Image (cartoon, rainbow, N blue to C red; front, side):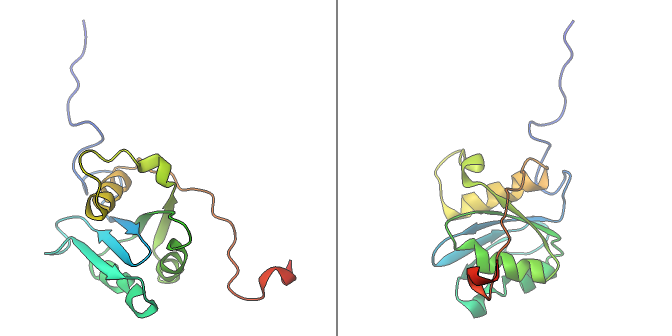
Length: 142
C-alpha cells in the first residue's frame, strides 16, 4: 500500500520554508536584481546599479527585515556587494551558478533572483567555498 504525499514539492511557497527572511540576488556587470519575500515590500523585486553608491541596496534589505542572502558567483562582480552585505551583518550564501541554472521558463535577471530567493528560503542552496579576499597589501603579505 503506497502512501500519498502531502504538501508541495520543494517545501512550499517562498517565505514559508526554513528561511523566511531570505533574499535572492542576481549580480551582473551593470545591474543587480534583488528579490525579497512578497509580503516584505510592495515592490518585492528591485534593480540596483553596480556603482559604489548604489551598492547600498543593503539598506533596502534591512528595511525588508532580511537576515540572509543568496547570490550567484558571477565573475568578480559579486565581490563588492558581498563585502557590503557582510559588513552590514547579513549572512551571505555565495552559490555556484551551475547549481541553480535550471530555472523553469525563460531565463531573465528577475526570474533568476526570484528563483534564488525561493531556493534559499526553503533551504535548498549550499554555499560555495570562498577564498579569503584581501582588499589591501596584495600578495606581498603572504
